Image (cartoon, rainbow, N blue to C red; front, side):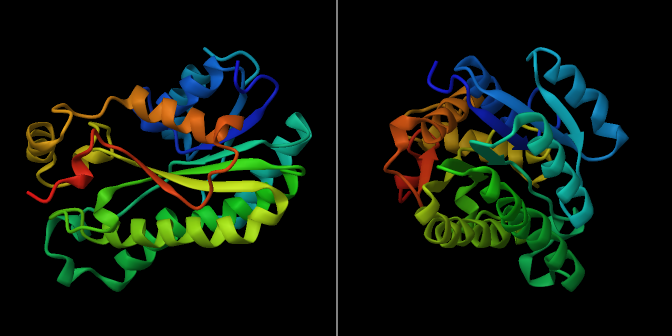
Length: 254
């Protein structure tokens, strides 16, 4: 029970195949009580049905592009939990038309949307989380290798993830004096609803499976357990890092 008595907020669960849900299962298994957000009525039923398996969970609306909804989310978390020990950021978005073609043709509006939702949202959430983490806490974000290497079809999402990872480092600096740690997990490709929107995703899975030192695709539970480590006392000296959970694919040159 590494997280017994801890309170956490996971932003970005969409359905049972979400990497965010694998993180939730790992944290709950080790004793954490969790809150979840949903964006719009379309996702509410999915999130509520999943959270029902974790007694004591909170399920609250929040669109991370709306300041008033973020304020309301953290207001309710403070009211129900009193404090927050863990924040997990699993939010990313890019318009389909900005993934289908070459990065060169990314639109201004598409660039703004991807950076706002995928990267700035971490800053907005951390601003509200920090006052609730008196005495220390852990912030964990999900990222991907496309932040530092070209993954055709990932396009503007790669740029957004690069900004997200830079945000991890700057927030780690700003929040370290409060004993709040900020880290990222760079997962190998996993077949989620969002990932299947990336052109050529099936081929991507095959390549990673064939070329990784551990010749398989990433299991969502592996990411969940890595998040558990980063959120626990075991990682008390780790901040500003991006931990790769991709069966070693990122070390390969060819």
